[in-house]
Length: 279
Ligand SMILES: C[S@@+](CC[C@H](N)C(=O)[O-])C[C@H]1O[C@@H](n2cnc3c(N)ncnc32)[C@H](O)[C@@H]1O
Image 1 (cartoon, protein in one colour):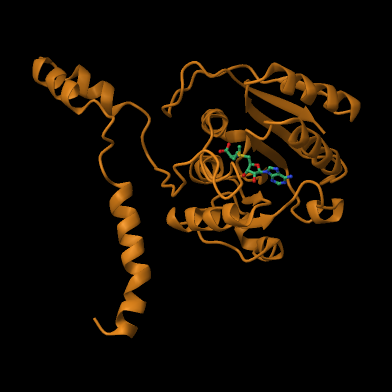
Image 2 (cartoon, protein in one colour):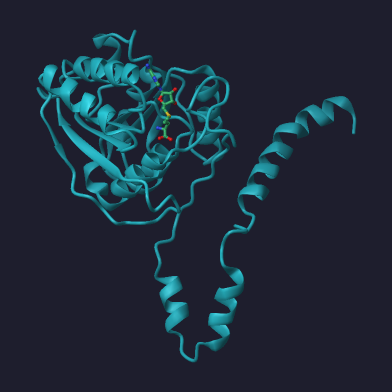
């Protein structure tokens, strides 16, 4: 292959490779026992049961195999991201035709699931880490969504506000909770703010409450956005610190009823919660 031909073919090959790998059968899926059950089953009940399981769109992700790499936890998908995505898919009306701002998006699973299943008007993925932002952009493109270059471009398509718009307007923003300002947050015009697995140490808890306080000053149609924070209860003291700091910041909260919508495989024993915050 001539050098210019190989340069042209490289993105195509990469795209093919990703899609091919994503389409591989899950080795952990119990194919053998399924086949045996299908052979033994006299009626069509088992097949019907399989066919009636939730299906539809899929999310393809490129992510790290290490829990922490490049000094960040954001290159892998955490359990609370899956739990929050499941809850969102159970409550799509809360997202439909609204602008969602996600804090600490990481690899992007929650947002991609919401974009594909809950029909938001616009979705702002955000994070503070360069590698995470780069991987996030790749994952969004991998899932066939097109990216707006910045938040200003989100607002430049008035026709896209219509209820029957096919896919949301999507952008990725660098948002560091410690340095972002109220006007910068207000420019996203969020109706709803979400975050998953961002309560893992006291420092991040304090930073998160700080950005939530700034968001409470971002009024749209005379009201602040709704906010939902999902987390795995690893250390009760960290969760306690979060609710204490919310109280100190004057942000009321309530726990969202637990859901048992298990669409994704994750550790059975990890205890998860979602708090709804009244900003
Ligand atoms: C444990 S990961 C969770 C990622 C994703 N939400 C998930 O659940 O899979 C935490 C994320 O929060 C981001 N983060 C931590 N501190 C941050 C800050 N001060 N500003 C913005 N993002 C931050 C990290 O970069 C990382 O992507």
